[in-house]
Length: 89
Image (tube, rainbow, N blue to C red):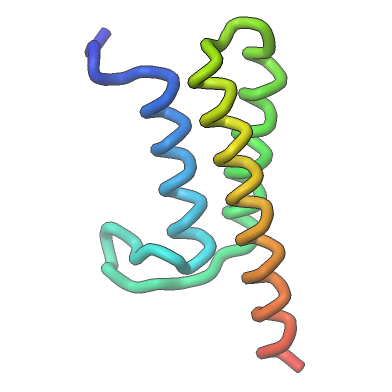
């Protein structure tokens, strides 16, 4: 296994994907920012699942990372969803 791939880098990779889905970062292929709330919600759910399935097996740093990541993504999801709803009305 590549030593540079850790649980933390995996969570950060998922977080980056969620930020792309929330339109905060450009898509690495198209270089465009586009909101996809379904994909963002799915990525957040995957991180939540990982948090639950790894409970008791993470270092304090990993636990803090996953908690902070989820908190940040959920807040941003609500903000973006609210803006998307306002745009449609």
